[in-house]
Image (cartoon, helix red, strand yellow):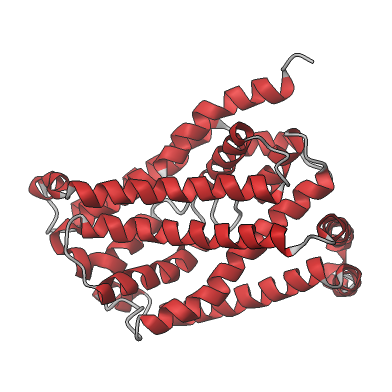
Length: 349
């Protein structure tokens, strides 16, 4: 695999911070203008939040980031120090924040790990493992949490019904099926039969209207084989902490919003489960967003999914949610990137 340094640095460009910020702010101001229930008094409602709820929201964000740092360090067999692992995660999150969610920061993550001294084959393997585990959390966890939500997972929103009708449910289950298929195929390719996967891939891309991508498919097949070799022979002592960290990361990610909503409204145990479950649905919507870091998409759908739990505090909570869970990574990435470049490219030997 050849990493295109020019394209990587185009993605890791601090100036790109302004694109998602402006999109997000534009949607927020549009919502403020169009919603007759939102006014200056509504904005002052941000100070009505309970300290304990905000505190736990911040704690869950920190838990998520600690989980990410621990997981990447464990996956790399502790080749990264704690400090270097923090740099990797911040820059990875920054790349994800400035690119459309459907694109993600995979190539950037491989590049970062490679520049941190991880061999390219291993870097590819490690990034693929994180992607597969993240998808498997959704594939396995979604049915469980949706069952616990007792069918109240799709919001009863007038706007959603007018714009989407039943297509949200169709979108979710279609996406769930695709994620399941992708996860099963990639897990089988990586851990069971990488050469068979490459053979099938080349057969598919030998079709007339796909043949122009055959070289890329050949290269991708080689990457899978190389990554599979790197992971071969790993024992359960290697996998169990990584799987546990993945569950911890995603649970913390979702519980952050539960804590934030409970800062404004008292929630029953059932409501907590429904809010958690709806985040699974919204995650799918955000994953197919064409905007950087789902800017605009996230703010719009937040109000449709969680208005019934927040009533008059929906607008301010959506702003707080993005301020706590998204914008810090734009700022941290812009701060850490120059330091990382100096360390990796200009450090004294």
